[in-house]
Length: 271
Image (cartoon, rainbow, N blue to C red; front, side, top):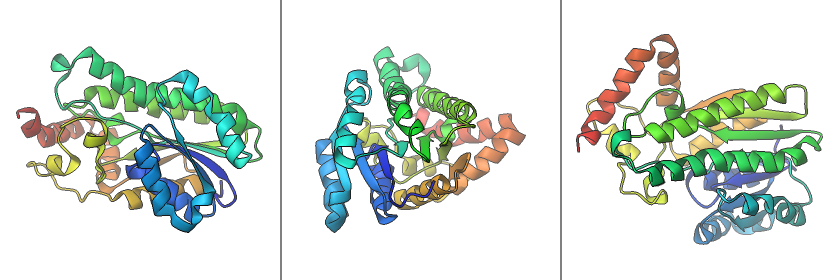
């Protein structure tokens, strides 16, 4: 789906990749409904857009609240008159501990944001997308959604759920006007730990362990790859050399891939 002239809803639009997606969508001629739980984050995104701010509406919303999500289409239609695309980018990580040490409250929080948030947004906006001549859903999974990352097991499980949900949506919508893409980012230079309300290790800290090193992908580059994939109706997009390599390795030698990630994470788990 070509983005120029389209209206796209983006969750997580107040920071990180979601903010970059919002900025670059505007640059490609799209209108954006940016959704985030942080009013301050959305205000900063709007400030960065500058002269094109009229092309963006901001919507403070908790995507884990179904009633709140179900009220969003009316607000987006009021602002833009249509909805052509949905990018489910918002997500959080868990405390960097093993499952045995993880509280149920943390497990539920991660699943609520990463899976149920995607589900609520998709179920709510899909009927509107089906009415458009051309539409698109892009869901952000993770490299941790196709191979195990010790210390982020529940995060990975939530992103694996997003992976399979998105692939199933692609199949269900194959004969419709709605294209579907799943994205697998690797290590991205964002503040996801801070935005998750945690003191968990960052991607850069993880990269300092004794495993093979990969250069982290900048949010602007990640957003560009994702939007390029959206415009060509890609089935799947891996973001970063780490994700691309581990995607291949995990399919060819899954146990070796798991051992490689364990080596990278072990020093962080051991504290």
